[in-house]
Image (cartoon, rainbow, N blue to C red; front, side, top):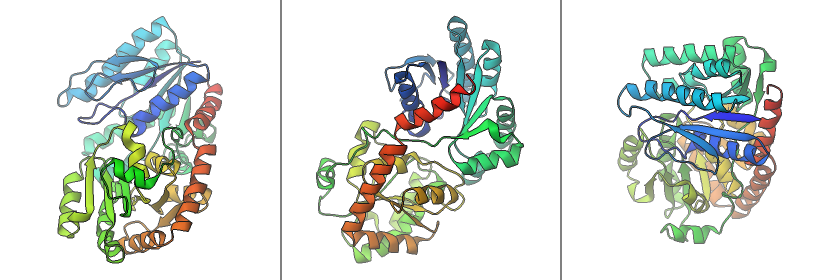
Amino acid sequence: MKIYFFSYAYEVGISGDIGGFRKLWELADRLQKQGHKVRIFFPKLPKHYPLKPISYTSYPLFNFSLLRAISAYLSMFFYALVQGLREKPDIIYFRTSPNMLPITLGKCLGAKTVLEVNASFHEFHKTVRVSFLRHFIFSVTERFNVAFSNKIIVLTPGLKEMLLKQYKVSPDKIDVVPSGTDTEHFSSQDPRESKKKIGLNPGRPVIGFAGIFYPHQGVDTLIRAAKYILKSYPDTLFLIVGEGVMGRYWKDLVESEGVESSFIFTGQIPYEKMPVHFNSMDIFVAPFASNRGETSPLKVFDALACGKVVVASDIPSIHLLAKEFNGSIVTVPPDDSIILARTVIELLSDEERRNKLAKDGRGIISERYSWEAIANQVTSVLKTVG
């Protein structure tokens, strides 16, 4: 099959190699290795470049103010249309965004359209407080895309239930395919050596977080838990990897809590250097806020692939995941800094348990959540529409 993938990453300062944008390249790469012909369309912006040896088209846009989004979508449509007239695609794969043009493009080229829904934008908009107009546009475009796409892929069972309830779509139209991770890139390394490589004392415990700094990540809960953890383990370091809108607030909170000497904010780390940062962590924490909504967290999978035990908030999507991982994901109530601290302390005090859970988690990730395994699932879905 010939498959077009659309990347909509046009936001200011967002790198094209993080999160779901990285996922498109990883998924496309594995599908290409299966024999499919793939092409990725992405915006011509700083920090955006080909991540894999895959055919691509980089489309221009007006990189300022309100014209950025509009010009990105129109340019993506035009360049894909011109390319598609030369080599008719079978599938157009796109993710939830305020853009109905992929459906139109599919009609023009006679291609089937596959929509990926990777989160509830309703919940996300509540946490970042978007304008009524932006929320309305998202509502209209998602309803349109759900109705007229040929197939929908969602990352969690909860997202499928959400779409069924909101849009009354046929259950047969929706398939659940989770995110995954590169189990070769993210692999277990010696924690002490990893700590040395990034300038940390190899003898100090490290509690880590990685992700885009959005309110729903719940890092404020981890910050408030730090003083309790430090009472039991005074040498603990808290390694916070990433950047985003909450950066200034979280740094101010660290200072007001009086724990600034124990926190390191690294900023955004290049993808190729992330394994050593994960491996420097003794415990990875994903303290999602209670209003996070449905999620399939890539960083949790990356940490598990590196052989790390994960402590995560017991929100619905994580609850189901934790059951599958047989304890390698230890769940705690969201927004509860005291229980989070208690759980971290218990794990720090039991290295044998940590190592066992980490080994088990790595095994499950390798078997079920490698990009190869995910690509196989996506191929099965595409065959039903292609």
